[in-house]
Image 1 (cartoon, rainbow, N blue to C red):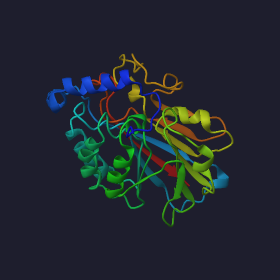
Image 2: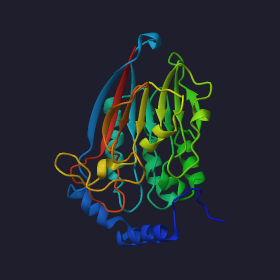
Image 3: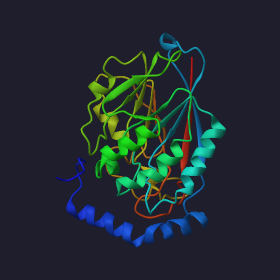
Image 4: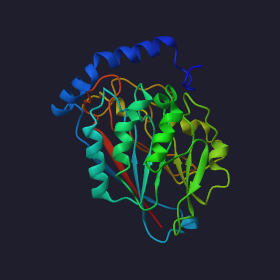
Length: 285
């Protein structure tokens, strides 16, 4: 039986990913690319979200950090993960949210990332969803390694934050493009203030009557290779990847959806006009 449960993974895609990994020379190309500055420079993007009057229950501002699309493996140099953890120590968020695609091709590659994530301990916890690349490999192994690093993986479920922020729930869905996302389960009995966590912005298509106060997604890499104005040259798979490729989008009837450029590299170890991004979002009471 195949170890993966992700859809849209034909044999041709498996062969292509294996070939790309082979040409990466066990990470040598990524190491050269990183040291040459071709992975881009990690940027911090800050957002402020003021809750509606009827939901202003927070005892203090709540700082959320969001990072996604790590793609651990021979295409992304692991020093980039160390740089991320250093920046998280500087930013000191209350919560760390992780948007999936922890690996590119092999589940075991997640170890280089979880070793570093275990060094980060925000006071209100670490929460994650899975991405399409995770579902195309052994996602059970990835979940186990993340759990060992203190990360709660949310697959169509939610968890409230610890007191005194227990009026906030983190609601995470399975990957909407390749998995079996169930938004109703993810939001069931959630607290009044809801943070929506989805690997891909395509999760917006599944909302139905569920509402959120702020949402986070990745998957797009901001194109990874973009024009000078940030317009992606190529787009990731999924119907909303072009229109929601990077930045903040106001969603009618909900809070904003913030789409990150992600951290690592997929397919080739190069980023152009689409630097790695750590999102810091402050919810104001």
